Length: 69
Image (cartoon, rainbow, N blue to C red):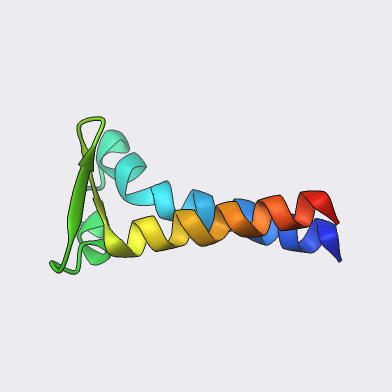
């Protein structure tokens, strides 16, 4: 069960970083769905929306919990 939780956490982290990866490979239009317009935080030159931060944060927590179990 711990491996499944860790894998889910890793998947959520990857989905959270997709809007940063998509414009680099040539699909900037699909990244707009992650920016809901409520809150953005500029980190390291990239704008992170609240959806992206939530996905990355929850993924990190699940990855740690899955690795500990």
